[in-house]
Amino acid sequence: MSRCILDACALLAMLRDEPGADKVAAAINAAHNGEAEVVMHKANLLEVYYDLYRSQAGRLKASYKISFADSFALAQALVSGDELLTADHHEFEPI
Image 1 (cartoon, rainbow, N blue to C red):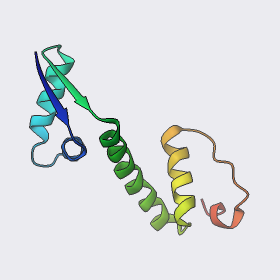
Image 2: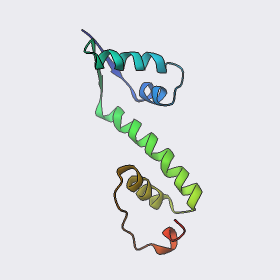
Image 3: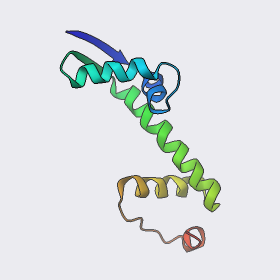
């Protein structure tokens, strides 16, 4: 059985449909079918998570004019579906 190791850029390319996305998708499909093994180090997976999270937080910051830290708290609540508790009514009132 073949085995490949993904880095963060490879997975991000697939998620964003960038050049090389088809090769990454093929490897993941082969793993799903039991024909191959695909692994990724936790540090690389964290980099993917951070990159995707950062872009969502950036959009929220720009859209709602909230602070940098508050944009991450809001992004986390939206991604997880959890309730965001805050005493910062000034920042979150428009939202």
